[in-house]
Amino acid sequence: MANVTTWEFIVGLLYVLGGLGIFLFGMRVMSEGIQKVAGDGMRRIMASMTQNRFFGLMTGLLVTCLVQSSSATTVMVVSFVNAQLLTLMESIGVIMGANLGTTLTGWIIATIGKFSLSKIALPIIGIGLPLVFATKPKLKHTGEFLVGFGLLFFGLSELKSAVPDVKSLLKSSDPADQLLVQDIQGVIEYLNSFGFGSVLIFLVIGVFLTILVQSSSAAMGITIIVAINGWINFEIAAAIVLGENIGTTVTAWLASIGANINAKRAARAHFIFNIAGVCWMLLLFYPFIGMLDNIMPGAIYLEDVTQQEAVAYLQDSGELNGEPTEDQIAKAKKSIVDRNIPLHLSLFHTLFNLTNICLLIGFTPHLGRLVEKIVQPKVKGGTPKPGSLASLHYEGSGVLPKTGELNLALVEAEINRLAAINRYMFEGFVEVFESPNEDKGKLIRELSELEDKCDELAFDITQTLIHCTTESLAGERALRVASLLRVTAELEDIGDCCNRLVQLAHRKYRKNRVLPEETLREIKVFSEQIIDFMELYQTHLGADSKAPDLAKAESIEDRIDASRKSLRKNAVKRMKETENLKAEMIYVDILNEMERIGNDALNVVHALNHRV
Image 1 (cartoon, helix red, strand yellow):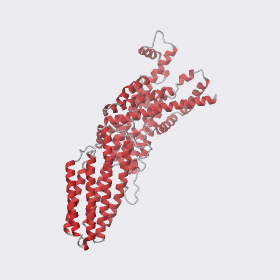
Image 2 (cartoon, helix red, strand yellow):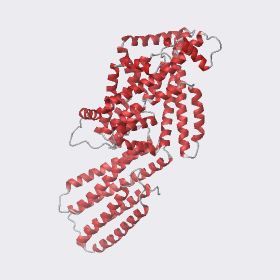
Image 3 (cartoon, helix red, strand yellow):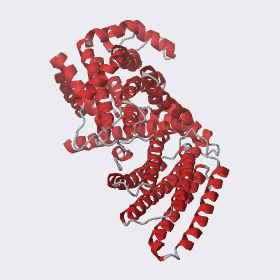
Image 4 (tube, one colour):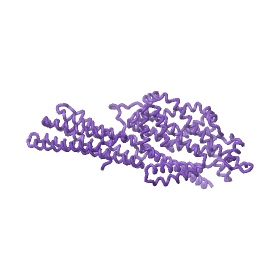
């Protein structure tokens, strides 16, 4: 009998995990679908967060409602801070909004849960599935959203079915079922016997539950279902919800490992903000729960449902024919409680986060200064280097959120940085070349180190773009990723050319190779053409920028080719003089490298215009 019970327990556990898996998969499909539908609109929402803490609050709220995960939003915020797209103070407002946005899931479950989840889920999937095969991107992505939405509720329905109802098990004729209920209820009653200490125990359980499923929304769904099925009472469920608010900060904390100092501070600010909220809520826990009954009437315990309410419920639902039986009354009471518990839990979650924001939003600068004191820079040989995408890109770990549409903003910031480093290196070459009588050893070493930085940046950008391509982006975004991959390769090649130019200039003045004054002037004019080309593509690398003028780019490249041919021809003539041979050979190599930069720059412009 023990073996049969163990086997049944394993099968039951697998059903629970299967329902949870469908729920999480549905949430991911829905999130990715709505990101694609929102597209550039969501990117503009993210851009608005830089204005002030209140705009940041609304940004965090809207983005979290869209991606249905406060963990994903806060990891994005850490990523944006790490890429220097957000300041620490701006990020705190977004994090506050993310905490409020994550309460939407509970309201969706509570509202839709009034109906049969399985009856709603399958028709929604049925509507969305044909749209998935549509050729128009908007229809296709809307279909993906609907399929994800349906799967989410189908998973909830399966999860609800897989978690056994306490009353049905107690009525079971199988002694093993009754014994199982008594054992579990005994454990819960024991944990609940510590008074206020039991609130702390279940708070810790909520923390670990959220860490385990890596989603506060999923943890909220599990909590609601377990409460509906009678395993825990409302106070325990509320304590678990408080724990989920702490557990959701762990993902962002993990994402900040290896990131720059401000990204670490943003993750700590999220943790402190949520911990502070939980602390004051624990002090007012029972009065706060009592207040909920005044705001939203409705029994959340079976013993509080009156006979009249049960009869009224049966009449409204059309299930009453004559005098109600005891079973009908019991079923009606449970249905009333099942309807009220999700609504009360959602209200508790929302009011807690809203009150916490109202209390602490005025202290945002103080919170920023606090985390600056807590997370001090490790000064070892100078200030820390700015973070890069590498510190937020964990291969296969799932820490970087599946938000390809928004990750592109991070990539674009890094590509801008790569282009800026290339330009600085080229201008450094010009300075070294024009100063043969000055010691430029320090500058040359700096430029050589920057070439390594270019290679590292290009690798990180490419890896992140490949990561984005694994997430089925919207049509225009997918084209943008392909364009940026090519731009990155060309910019890396420009960095290599700049490094070779610096080495050639270094060799010229180290070997004391003298060139005529006219040649030096020619190089200066030639280098100005290259800088004009760099300026042209640099100002068009952003997502909202128009594609650079192709005709203008080809005109600059033609001038560069013509200049290189003319100057090379003059250099070959001067090579007839033996004493200038080596100097002229260096000069020709410099011309070739500069022409190659011109070719690469034209390729960047072609890529931004989606030209092969």
